[in-house]
Amino acid sequence: MSYQPPPQDPNNPGQYGGYGGAAPQQNPPPTDPYSGQQPGYQQPGYQQPGYQQPPYGQQQGAYQQSSAASASGASSTGLQPNVAAGLSYLFVWVGGLVFFLIEKQNRFVRFHAMQSLIFFGGLSILAYVIGYIPFLGGILSGLLWLVWVVGWIFLMIQGFQGKYFKLPVVGDYAERYANPGTM
Image 1 (cartoon, helix red, strand yellow):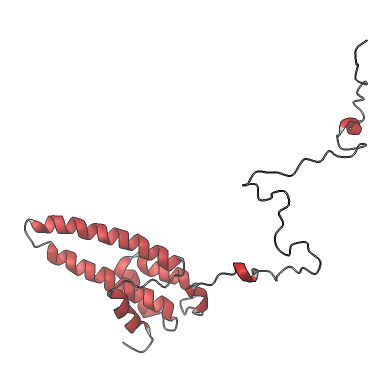
Image 2: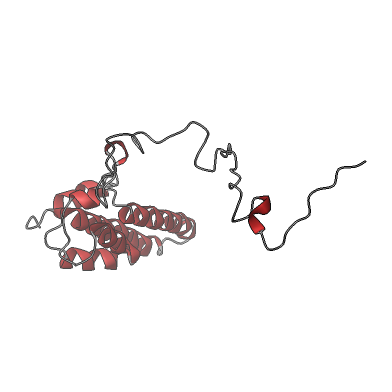
């Protein structure tokens, strides 16, 4: 005699762990480190007695991040300070000049605009002068172009991330002229 399973009733889907009738089958907790949950792991305080969810838009203390853009106040351009700082590098020294003239109160935006103006304006003048050197001018122009592109990408990322990155020599001058009313 062999084992024969009981006949399945198509009108009772819960008969074998479907939606009705029997208790749902529970899967074991995932053990994959990339799934977000591991057996026995629980976020600190989460679902603990007395735990309160922080207000919307705020993070818990240890995970809270601050940036120079948020700490420096509002921008008179109507943009977020980090966006205005990143855009001041987008059109190299022209963008720096525009944002330096438009921005009146935010020192963070004025610093990045002035740093863009001095750095890329200086590179533009240097590229013009190097263009007149006969043989060596071509080699130096290639190196200058590489500095231009790397500096442009790096400084734009720093500005959009809200970081107060100061170039070695240029940053000192930019910092000096970033205060409103100093120039």
